[in-house]
Length: 311
Image (tube, rainbow, N blue to C red; front, top):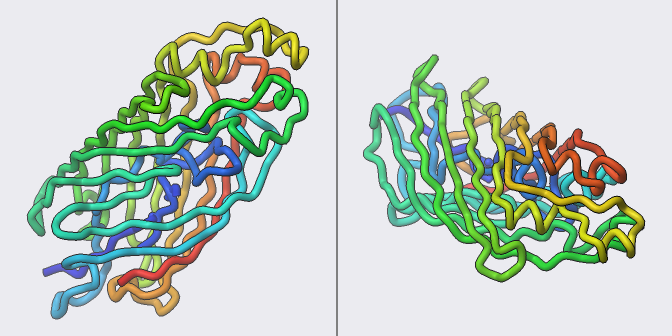
């Protein structure tokens, strides 16, 4: 039996705050590529394991039920498209219990209801996904954008599905393809958002691992109209030009994660630290809206650091 470990939580991820992080609201955990989407992101399957070089004589903390909990701090745009940056807390929660994987999402989580057999050549994940979206609901730093009015928080519910291939280039790495689709059930944007992501994780040593994620965000008319349209009333209040946003891809981005076990052994759990750096580029109407083009920037950067305990 190979010794194994999990890069856990946003988001990401043992730690993963959230996947595919980039444009992010100050009050949220890091989102996947493109704020309210720059992201985990979609980006990491729940309960995903990655091998760590070591002997096969004994098991690891990740062989059965396990949980990673902790906290971190992130620095990112105060809203999707902002060039004002803010510090915000990043909660850490990931694990597996009774065969159900738990993976972080920006201001939410995803569950994996498929309990893959150990040593499977290909692993699958499928389960519900949840997110609280707070873009421009609070902590708007730009005074002009603030005049356009606050938005309501959206509660998004949907599905996360994916496939991962372990032992791609070495016995311990993994390549994952993940797709999250969610719908607002709280009457905020009333729309749908889809977040695809590709992630590659590999150990660098017995006590250190790295992950690279590329992700994107696509949203429908209702979503983009809510976050990126400037209607007549908003234009009058703020002085921004009127703008009508339509469905389309809002962002593409990437993030790099480094997980470091503080006792030099990722396999035995305990305390680990994580560093994440990310960048996303806003596209289409997310880029062209006056909230971005007149008051912010299409280039969105993100950084985070945190610590977690795995048991």
